[in-house]
Length: 267
Image 1 (cartoon, rainbow, N blue to C red):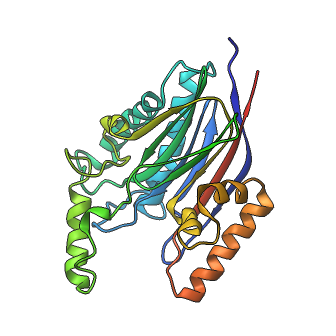
Image 2: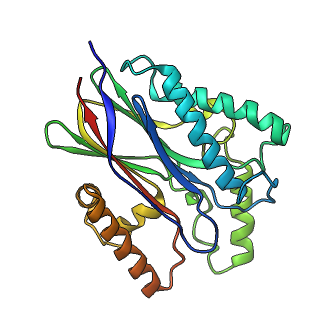
């Protein structure tokens, strides 16, 4: 059976407030992804990029391209976790050359990945990136993992010093049993992700949490509204413009926002 592949109809990324662009996205062969570099809380290592998270997002993008190509265009050869695990294995090797054994301060990212299979698509989510899949039967499925800071709670919001201490502790404990797993340098993170296997898809939208803020603020009505708004480059640009306008009115710091919309090409 010949393989399907992806083509993109929308690929848009806008920088947020307060730091350089730390999102990226891409696709190769049967794999597509959005990467959202985690904001800096711990001292940076000074990696050769605009920031440590920006360096990480860019290099994971390149390593996912290599892993997707190595998996080959034949659908179903590798699962989504296997493709990500291969990229993170290569990241661990790269990390050893630039950061030695450092893990806790090594940059990380939320990620959402779509992998074509022989009979459909597999979606993998780590932390708070999102996917909306339009299936061949016209239904849609929303896939995400876990909000990045949900474990610190809101009871300390009136005490910014204590809240920051908890955020730092949460970051230090990531990728350990019972805590939030993210893409960093541990290949086993790929098997801690939320992974969903679905049937044939017409279209897949992958988004960073900065773009998904349009749903949370009510600019679009849920996953189906987001899917519709991300259907074309013009509509997606209008969505992000509306988001930035509302965030400015609310006085809300804007996060980087990335949308990648893909259509399956049948053989």
